[in-house]
Image (cartoon, rainbow, N blue to C red):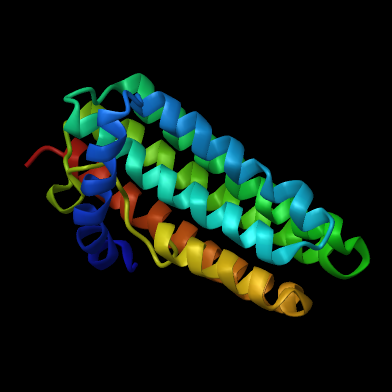
Length: 208
């Protein structure tokens, strides 16, 4: 929901950082993999209840996730392979963060973590399934030109997910409640995406 406003604000600083990385001969896929490895370090850190370092790893991952695309566009190297790698590793990272909280306190957190992962399956599959169909029909999103695929909006998007992860790390004792609330919002996103996506594609298939 917030990405349409936050993404334009972040592009200028991301481009400046990407320009510096380009001078250092850093390639977009290298940035993607480095950000992923940094983000995955949050899993053991969360399991050990080292929440401040875990939060730093999460934020660095999200920074790298923004920089790799800016770097690809700056070098005129955007590619389907790079976009695929980026989104695939993103979803693995999201799941790893939730798993980290489950491991930190299984008795208190495991059920809420499982519910959130269930909700993530809904948001992720509805998001990617529509992107496939949008590509087939040649649909575009002018507001998200920097994306390698059709970016289907919803109540919970990238910005909301980052904010949720930050809240989890700042108030780990409230993870069960926060995770359930965010999971409910994700399920609402899933329902609206499935309904909106279905209606959009049906309209394209129905003769005028």
